Image 1: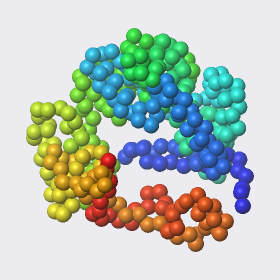
Image 2: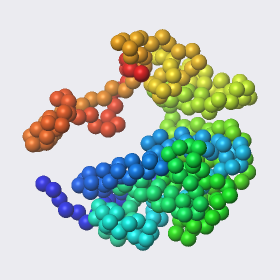
Image 3: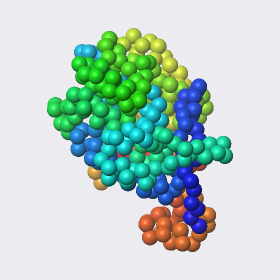
Image 4: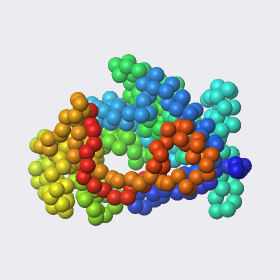
Length: 345
């Protein structure tokens, strides 16, 4: 039966080897209503060139250009979603939108058994937090002289969450405006001069991608070594003649391949297949079936969760929505890996 709760529940997820990121688990009915609102905001933002689905690539392109020519500044904020105050949203948004978002947000968070009233508007875990902070930061950039447009030729600024790129000429104005609204630019990730720029996971020095590959877990299985080999290869990027490529990285890449069984090591293919194959210059030969190309890969095996875990009325609703009769597949439910085929058009 539905239960009424006062707000969301605080928890943490790993951020890196030293830190954990705080998030909140929203009540199920709230999140079911927040997500469509976030999707609508995402669609409207895309109309002015703020693509929250594939925008990271655009950011990396501009950051690369900024490191080459010094034309763009990259700005990053510290604890962005945690510093979007309730009063800021009320000040900047139309009253109807403010009322809508207010009715869907959680006003309290449960931490260590105690309820804490929130002054921030929403946390990571809310279904529209990312879209809302993008909208707010884009509004501040626009008021400071930045231009957004669907066409690349007619825009000079981009915002993706708290990753902000603006022309160098207005960067000081944008930073001052952000501070006025209570936001804190991160000095370690904000670059308005020099030959280095960073945005959306891309680190560029004079137009060259210099971002290292981060090993989050010690590789033990073939899929781990494939991921590490592909990460090392991605460090080279499109920098022909790199000393690292000729010596250090190539040697490390071969060391990774030595830890992969021979029948899996043969699975070479394009980067579009992700870490299902080893990225290389020479690929295996795919099969064409009915105009669709199929590649042999090392893919995960997922096990459906049997239907006896749910009430009959849930089973009926799921069947009407077209959920497979074998049962739903839980997120991140991997029972193992095997060599198989996948399609790539």
